Length: 570
Image (tube, rainbow, N blue to C red; front, top):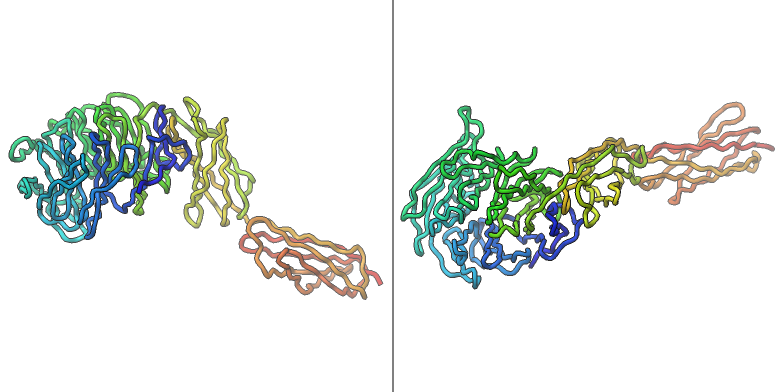
């Protein structure tokens, strides 16, 4: 069933930070769908039929399926398979979808959504395959190990081609996993990268000419320097629309832009990803206009950058942070794909705990900067446990005012860990107040974030640290002005406290000091459920007598006391 659209919208003026909590208006063509799978294998965009195919890549026994979505992010069907599926590739004319299984390569007619054929291939139980179409032929990888450690450096990976209902061994092998890429800009070129080969290895990237009967290898490159530093940590590969450039998502380096003719560094490079962001995906729009770069980052550090494909274009990238439990925390490896005309970007995000989402993002437009200004203030100035705390601040937005109120999110970090705090709307003048109820004593640090909206980039996080104290209590006494020794003294009172409810079974200390300064402790006063209590006493001496009732406090409340003076006669 179709995942519900979350409020992460792109207006006609631009692009919203698709990972923000539900805060902005949704338009019919801007959607995010919860994927009903716990792992992600591959995504293919079919422009001819406006379909997006997603595999779960489970790599275990049992029934599996290829999920089918339309360009609005709505689930419209599935392609059933009797065994788990992993890699996929679309033919150059878009008519055939190639889907890999552990023992077969299936083909589906994209017009009718029905299976059209199958080729038997070497058995791969757990590791899954990468699939690409280049030179009019289908190519796939093979890591034939029946164990969960597919990235072991001693695993041998092979490259095969499909021939009719069987397969052809190309003879090319490597240690570690292989990743494949092809693209319409260079339809005869197959790009192959070594994804994993051990901590001390120096993985390669190479290209093959697939136009003939056999593959002809072109340039190759390894990236480590003479000291072994800078080795490739391959996450994704993409070819530019004109075929002249190859972009590599390198988990250790960022986005590498290479000259396709010899794999040398391109004359102009993309700017580095933001600090703390690890590259996971890269994709060029089919019209050659944009490049999208996906990453894994925390907080308001962007997980997605969209910018002109030409690195010489100085336009500031659009930056978007995914930081919502309901729509993902990061871009999944190889989780980006464009429509051919560049009107939509499809992004798969994950939360690291089995949650996956498909975002449909409209073409980007200009964004403006945002920033927190001035110091953060708190109300009350000295917060107490169990009582509301307001954190006041101001958010400044450049450019046009947002169509809908934006929100500031926050997290609280204390000795118990990190806890999300309810988001706060930003007023027209930029002011906001984040509300929280701290639930433990001691130091608490609040981090406030603005993750962007339809026309604004994320703001740099700001923090404020407070010292949460015990909640105050108060003792109230009602006593007679005079009493007799024979009649005795009766004092009533009430114990009240702020914050959390006071514990049950409280006994209050009661002392009596006579006119000679002699102090003695009386029987404790028991506090009822409503906080009331009663003190009775038969004093032995005449004159001014002072009664003091005190509460020692508890783990969350401070102590308090009160005195009453009674004149004893008779």
